[in-house]
Image 1 (cartoon, protein in one colour):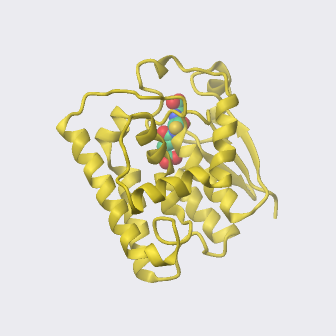
Image 2 (tube, helix red, strand yellow):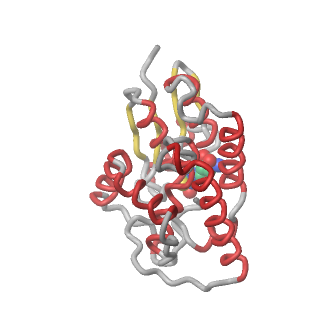
Length: 224
Ligand SMILES: N[C@@H](CCC(=O)N[C@@H](CS)C(=O)NCC(=O)O)C(=O)O
């Protein structure tokens, strides 16, 4: 078996890359990374050979290309984590999958108004009804998951799972856009992520990045 190779984009902006990368790290498998900076001639020149959808992340392994973040997380779970990136309990697993699917296809207002940017500090955006609704829904989703799994560990479903990989970028956004996590289980959940060594590793690499996409100033970095 060859070692997997993950194609990612800027660590500051690419939330979909972060999700796949976190799952690979948590699986413990050794993997290579190749970073293509968004909005650069290098990205335009290389992406067609590396990802059929022309998006990142893309995972290459044993001659296969998996080009979507959720499909990558599920592949990593099967191939390198012996299923350990989902809880053993079928109900918890189903909840996690529903949460991740909702993140992957929903939260349009939040994704449009609050793109992930590790550099963002105290950003203010118009508080539309749609955005407020997405934030309420997000917090309710997390609260329900934490309440049901508080005895099983500090992550959303107890132990770290794909759900945590999927919501990590939202914790980052809430930090940059001044959305406070309510005290108790959710504040604790934010702390769990921010203290996690793998998350911190990504964050410290993001801090060393120098590329800035033009959209950064306008808050339109990446559909994340
Ligand atoms: N549904 C895809 C979305 C991936 C996506 O949109 N990635 C962005 C970077 S975060 C991208 O590659 N954009 C390409 C571009 O802007 O040219 C997934 O989950 O992997």
